Every structure is written in C-alpha cells, then in structure tokens.
Image (cartoon, rainbow, N blue to C red; front, side, top):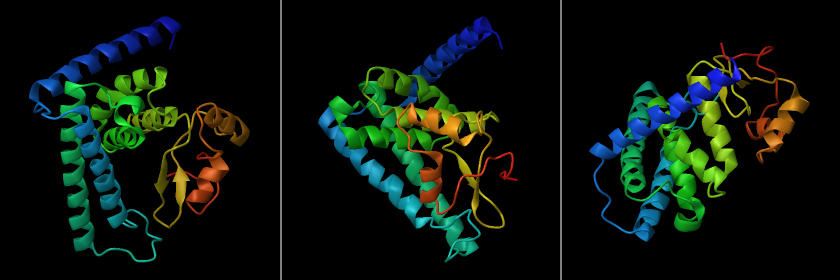
Length: 221
C-alpha cells in the first residue's frame, strides 16, 4: 500500500467512524448526571466488567483446573454479554454528552473502564471509538497501552497481524499461543512494546504461566 493510499484509507476510516459515532449518539439516551456522577457509574461498570469475566473462569481453556459444565458456561456467557451491553449503553450516553472519559476529568479508574468497555465490544463499536481513544492518547489523557491493545484486537478481528503482541488464544490441547504478529523476533517485538510502555513479551507470557513462542512456530489453530 502506498503512502497516499494509506492516507486515503485513514481519512476514510475517520469519516466512517465519525458518521458511525453520530449514529450512536442519535439513539443513545441522554446522560442526566454530571461528570462526577458519570465517573462513579464508570467505576462501577469496570467492577461489573471484571467480575463477570472472573466468573467465567476457564471458559475456552481446556486445561482449566475446574472446567464449567456446558449449562453453567452458557449461563455465565449470557451474563457477561448482558453486562457488556449495559456498560456500552452507559458509555455511549456519557461520551455523547461529554467527551471520551479523560484521566484528568474522570479519573484513572473511569478512563480504564471506558477502554475495557470498548475492548469487550463488537468490532464495529471498537472501530467507531478508536479515533476518540487515539485523540485522548495524543492529548496525554489516556494510557497508550490501552490504544495498543485495542489496535491489536481490531487488527486480529479483521484478519490482520497484530503489532504489539497483546492477543493470544487458548489451544484445544491446553495452553495458549499468539495470534499472528507483524514482527515475531523477540528482541524487536520487545522494542515495539517498550515504545508504548508495555513490559517484555516474556514477562507478559509469564503472567499466563507460559513462555513466548512465535506464532509461526506455534499458532492458534
């Protein structure tokens, strides 16, 4: 892709995202409270977001110590989807009235909540909110690691390789593997990650109880 075509694609994405965001605001209920009240509700939303994911336990990981029954798994997935929808509806009302929740106005926890809500939303929602998060990062009002993680998620969902190595999958036989990467070399990948404040890929892997293996050697399928 040439430099000009890349710029045109970016402009096209910006216009599409702006139009999609306007459509979301057309149907979103008006947030009736203040920024302080919005902050409180977002802080509660992040608690709900993490709780339903903790309750899912080892869903998707066949090596989990206490796998859920199919019935319980289905019940908990439905609970997660309900919470995700409710949290997204809340974020829509807040952003449409104010702005993307910034660290200085809304606080660190509310800013984290906004990122997590979008990160756990459908792809079209992620693409719609991506420019808002980018603008907040440029203004130093959002964590650049949040942007990196969201960009990776969007790339993976669109069938493109990720840049920062934040996206993994659970393998049917147990353990996990990395989604395709633009740069697999560990040293070069670490430099890319360090540029936006992410720890090394080996440290990230250790948090999952494993170690980094390039996706070309151990993939998700």
